[in-house]
Image (cartoon, rainbow, N blue to C red; front, side):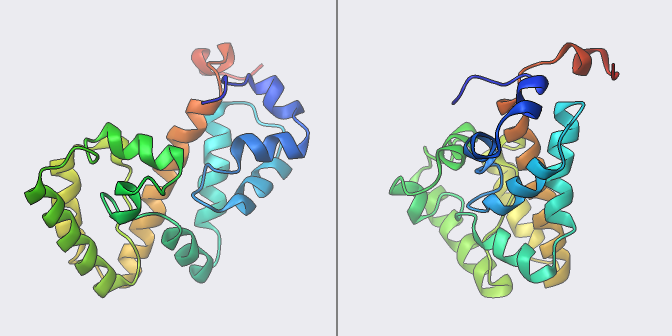
Length: 182
């Protein structure tokens, strides 16, 4: 992971360097980082995170589905084969999804298949805020959603993922810690 940036440095980055650092905040969707880059300057890390969330939330339903579909299945074949982004691999490991028993793996496979069959997209959740048990129960519960409810829920979760990824990339700022602006 790169050394966290200060807000001053983030606001002064040339676009290509901004894209290098923040292009992966939303899974395989660098166009959102371009929109966030264009919105500079930012006064806090939370404002940067909100810009990513806003860009995804305000996009068209089809673009949102494309963003959701860019995410890997949790504990899926791509994760097991090491074919996910470094961010996704680290996040899945944080919830223990890289250390499942054969029974747990089979249950994740069943839930992923049911999810794809009903919604034609992967189950997306901010795994850093969950345990493997809460992830599994959440998937089972969310299978009761309508496709529209699930698209909205997945975008909400993507916003939570983006927030944590942004906070990882921006160093603590005295202004953020004080809760104010200069």
